[in-house]
Every structure is written in structure tokens, then in C-alpha cells.
Image 1 (cartoon, rainbow over the protein chains, first blue to last red):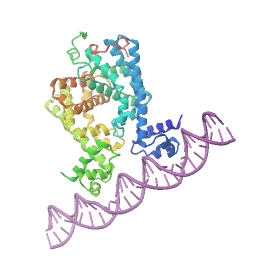
Image 2 (cartoon, chains in turn blue, brown, orange, purple):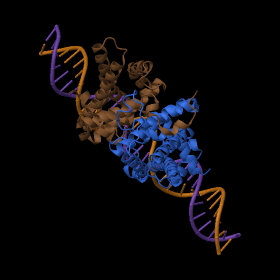
Image 3 (cartoon, each protein chain N blue to C red):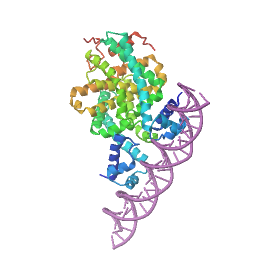
Image 4 (tube, rainbow over the protein chains, first blue to last red):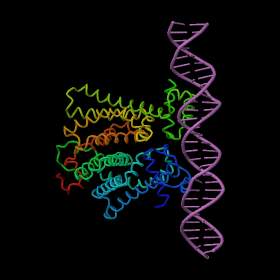
Length: 213
Length: 213
DNA sequence: ACCACACTAGACTGATTAGTCGGTTAGTCG
DNA sequence: CGACTAACCGACTAATCAGTCTAGTGTGGT
């Protein structure tokens, strides 16, 4: 592994344990087993190191989610139907949680520092483009009536945050993920917050399926 | 207003704008219009200032939510029925959002720093007791079958995060809150993610799989 | 008038830390 | 080989910042 990656890895671990402030660059280089000079050879400033780490992680995740969306799109060319949207959404959901469970440190980093003032706007913007595909998916779903008519960016936030919450919980309780019925319940929870407020799912007595359109 | 409060207010504003690290105590005292000595007279260390600010804000919010729960409890002595749970939940939800809209800075502070390593465990624990009432409410709802049977602490996390997400969105789009139908849709969204997975609103993806466990 | 005390002030200091610099090593290519 | 370059090293420095110290100030009690 390159020294650059070793430094990033050491930084990630220290940052989520102590935060940016309480992690001097000296501690990072020491943990990575390199000299201060090496660290500053690869990253001009501490801020650049933080940005690089953020980008590394965020791009890694975004690529995964984009892949999930595109795979589904390719598998289903006439992609404006209900079934397609539902499948894609489920696939993204699954990718997200699997990634978090496989990369708990990276996930924690995002949770802890996505809102942080240390990540500057420019860095953040270099990565947000991926959300457009995600937003498009919701807007398609809205025109088909399977999602609530609230603003689509709100739907995106709600869905994303539900996933984040789920991931956080699963990292602390990984055994739950083995249960098929739990997975279903969790996905149902995520999905149902996006569905419109129809009489149907407000009143459990009715047995009619909703066949909108 | 006491100098102590002036300092806390200035600190709050600077912290959410720049983060803890980039806000030296000198900047805080300057913004508050007091001398360094005064700041350190009221707070022994910078850390203590941060903790005090966190506690101030968090206790303020917790008290509000507890009040919302208790008011409802007093108004409805035989409190084990479905209607009561629903009303209480709605009241808490409303209190939370109203508070965030009325105190956007405090709200942002919580969002940004609740997970931060700067808030030590001890400080955090001094405040978490309030969640027990909240958890109890969900457990009652579960025994009545109106909430999903997922772990109750997961339900609490999911509900809380939904509210936080909603608040964040509303702070940036306050005009939406004026619409009665939007409020209803948003509340429906928050509530429905907690409801059990009945055949009625079950998602089609899981229907072809074995449900028994 | 006088004291006691909580509060205020801001220059100062010791410690820490981001980042530099001059020099060494390791790899590459003609 | 020899010349060039990128990666690496760690002692050093300039700057910053948390927290101290000493010296007031205003107020209320006696």
C-alpha cells in the first residue's frame, strides 16, 4: 500500500476517534509510520488532507450508488414503470447498507463530518452531482403516483437520512441484518415514509390494493 | 442580559459558522464584547464552555419535549389507548419542529455537534435520561400493535432523525410550513415509517419471498 | 465610610502545532 | 554509469491560542 493511502487510513481512524481538532498532523504521521515531511509532501496542508479523505470516501460511495441505479436501468430499458422504480430504489437501499456494514469507519466519517465546517463548499460540490440521478428517480416515481408529492429534494433527504440511521444502528447491532424479516421490515419503513397519504394505508381495514393509474 | 449569556450567544453563532477549531476564545470574547479574562471567569476552560452551551440547548429542547409528553398524559389519565399515543406523538412532533423553526441556530448546533468528539460522554449522559419517556411511548404503541415490532430504540432513532431532517428542510424553506396539507403530508411520512408491515401497504418486492420466521 | 465580593479587564506566557527546509534515498531512463 | 526526479525524512520555526495573573471596578451590606 502506498504511503499516501497509509496516511489517509491512519487519519481516518484518528479523526473518527478524536475529531479533526484533537488530531495533530504529527499524530497522523506517527500512526502511519512516516515522517511529517512525507505527510506534507502528499498533502500541502492539513485541510487538503481532510478534503482528500472526504472526497475519497464520498466518491467511493457515490460510484457504488450510481452503479446500482445504472445496472437496473440497463436491465430494464423501458424504465418508466412502477416496478422498475421500486426495484432500483431497493437496490440502492441495499447497496448503501452493505457498503456501510463493510466500511464502518468510512461511514462514521461521513456521519460525523458531512455537516462539519471543515469540509468547504467547493469540496462538497465536487461530489453532489451524483444526487441528480437519485433525485430523478424520485421524480419519476412521483409522476407515477407511487411517491408523495412533497418536494423531491425533501424526499431525497428523508430517504437518505433513513438509510443513514439504519446503517448506524446496524453497525452497532450487526446480527439483526441476518434476519430476512428484519430486512423487510426496515425496507418497508424506509419506503412507506415516501408513499402518498392515501385512505388505503391509513385505514388497515380496507383490503383493496392501490392500483394507481 | 448577563455577560455569561452574551458569551454563550456569541459562541453559538461563531461555532455553527466556523466550527470549534476555527473559533479561538479570543474571537468569542471579542464578538461578545468582553475581555478574555471575563470569558475564563465564567467558564474554566474552552471545553467547559462548549459543554455548557450543549447542555443549555439540549436541556431546553428536552424540557420542551417532556412537557409535551406530560401535558398529554395529564389530559388523558387512562393513557394506554391508541388515540392517546397518536396524540402524544403528534404533539411531540409539533413541539420539535416549532422549536427548531424558532431557534434555528440552536438547532443547527445540535445537528452539527451532537456526534462530535468534542462533547464528552459524561456531558452527553447528563441529558439522555429524557429519551426514556420517549422510548416508553413507542413501547406502549408496540404492545397496541400500532407501531412496527422493530427494536424500540431503533424506532426512536428513526423518528428523531425524520424530525431532524424535516426541521433542517423547513429552516431553509419556511414558507412550506404555512401549508396545512404539507404539514399533514410531512407528519404522515414520519408516522408511516413506524407502522407495521401490513399486507395493505406491503411493498411488492418482498411479496415473492418466504415470510415465515 | 468601609469592606467584601463577584465581576471585569487585557497584557502576558508556555505549550502546541501547522508547515518548512535542507538533505538523503530509491527509482528511472539514456 | 550518471543524471534527473519523485518520494521521503525529521529537526526546526513562526504563529497561534488556551489559559494565567494582577489590577481594577461597581454594588450591596453594615
